Every structure is written in structure tokens, then in C-alpha cells.
Length: 287
DNA sequence: GTCCAGGGTCCCA
DNA sequence: TGGGACCCTGGA
Image 1 (spheres, protein in one colour):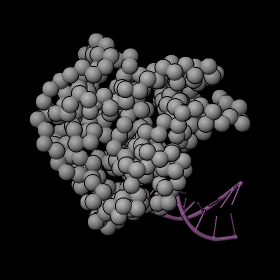
Image 2: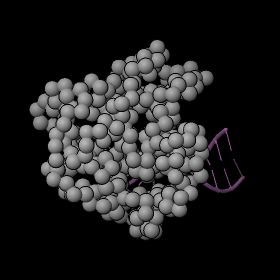
Image 3: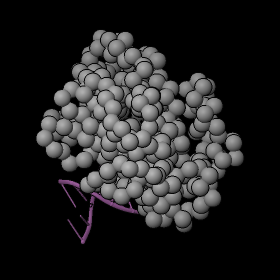
């Protein structure tokens, strides 16, 4: 177990990164003075991430290189930021969202998380994911001093091999409703080799999207989220109710998000974060 | 207590 | 192309 500094807090803003809706397994620990602390699990590594005095440090068992990759610190966002900053309203989103990183999450976990997300709110999505991990995820050995809402031993995300052997009734405790059969179908497709998520990382975003949409319960939105957040195809641009509202309100009717280029997904996260934060903090009324 | 919307998808007219 | 059904929950 060791603690290492992985970034300055301008490059990586952990609050924005964990709260911009791309991940569901990181929880804020009630704040003590002057620091922001989250705990969660990435892959098989439980971790505590702390931001204070302009630095982000991580306590975990995993090598520093793992976290560099997870937080996408190798990729330079500055050219994309500059491009987005030339577009009215989106320039403000860049300012608002500076420090967001598109996490390199496990593709299977991302796929399941966004299957669960459909027609659901973020608090409930997190609850379902949490119960899923507790019930069917492998308990992880860790000396990490989990505390408060991170209490108890951490669990890995349930492996597709486990989920493939389940029946919808086995998932009833999740209270995932009609989404439960979709999770099982996805797991069976992965286990049979029909759907190979590692291969889809290397194909085009379009090919990956089409392959995912063959599965039941996966339409445009969920497929795009899995492609962006799980496969790290940065040009994917998921359109949900928040983004639709933003596009209608702030862009010309013929605006094509693909004009935002190969990093369009980053713009999507900036927009999503601004829309949600402004609504949450009351700077903006919901229509 | 009721009502409604929540990072959708699918099916059928 | 549009509307309803699908599960369930937190907040108004």
C-alpha cells in the first residue's frame, strides 16, 4: 500500500471527473478541511483519491502507471480545448469543465453501467451497480482503510463469466427492473466470444457501435456511452436528455456534433457537466 | 399519500 | 415517425 502524487489538480480535477456522469463506483467521502476525497474501485484496485493543496494523490496497491492510464493522463487535451473554445457557449463549458478526464474504464463494466443507466437517475444507477458488485463481484483483498460510505471490503465488478450463468431472478435483489435480462444477454454474448470488447477497442467507433447495438436493450445512447467510456473512442458523442436540451438551446438546428472532431466525446462531457451543475446549483431553471 | 421524471429501447401502428 | 410499455425510486 502506498500513496503517490499522480497529477496537479489543474490537470486532473477529481470532483468534476467523478461527478460528470461517466462512472458510478466512486463516492465522495464526507469532507474534512481543505481537501476533496473520493474512494472507489478501478479494475481490481480499490483506492482512495485525495486532492489538497493543488495536488492529487492516490493510495492503493496498484502501480502509478495504472492510474496514469486510468485517468487518461497521457493524452493531451489542450488542442481539443482550444478547438472547443472557438465555439460560442461551448467555450464556457470548457472553462466550467477544465480538469475533467475521460476515464479509461473497464469496457465490460462501462457497458453494464450504461445498460443500467437507461431511463434511470444517477443515484439509483449507483445503487444498482453497488448491489451488483456486492452480490456477484469477487471480494478484493486490500489493506486500504475504507471509511464512511466506503465501508466494508471492496468488490470487483462482476465478471461476465459469472453473470452469464445467472437467470433474471438471480438479479432481482439489484432492483434493476427490466434491465436485468439485458445484463445477462450481454454477458452471454461476451462469454461466447460473439462480442469481443478488446477487439472493439481497435476497430472504428462506428463498427464498435454497430456491434454493441446487436444486443438487446442497447440502442444509440447506451452504445455510444460504452464506446466512449469503455472503449475510449473519443469521437463518440452520446446524446441524452441533457445534451439534447443543450444542443436545442445553444446551437443552430443543423449543428452536427461530429464537426467537433476526434475528441467530440470530451466536448460532450464538458457540456453535460455544465448543464447538470447549472441546474443543480440553481443557476438555470429546468424547462 | 400521489405524481413524475430519470444520461432509453423496443415494438407496433 | 410517434406513442406506449417496461421496472423502480427519490424528490416535489
